[in-house]
Image (tube, rainbow, N blue to C red; front, side, top):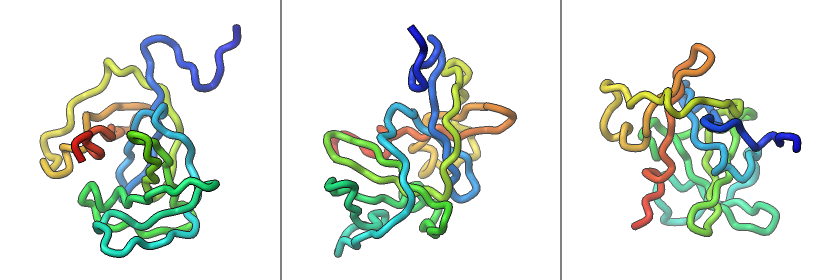
Length: 151
């Protein structure tokens, strides 16, 4: 039986990478439903600052979140390279706005390192560690910390 693109050899993990305010970040590619271009956004009155608004994705209402705002890096400045990662969390579709989408890469989870000590605690709580791949250091986003079950 042939191996499909989404399957991976035992002991490895696929990460969806992206750039956010000059930082290379990633999270588990299995959580990504799709990646789309920035389009029309309907603002939501009285929403928290990190909520950019809602988008209509083929009949599904998707809450669009500014990942830079959530991580304390500042508001995203949208341009032609901006992308939205669509994920599903507890039955709700969410869009995570990033500066630029990267590649899906294969890594060994055993090679994951802790978050560096020089990362501010307010930001470090959203990351589970770092991974080195192709001479680059990738910050690994913890989606569970972004969207805790009690909220």
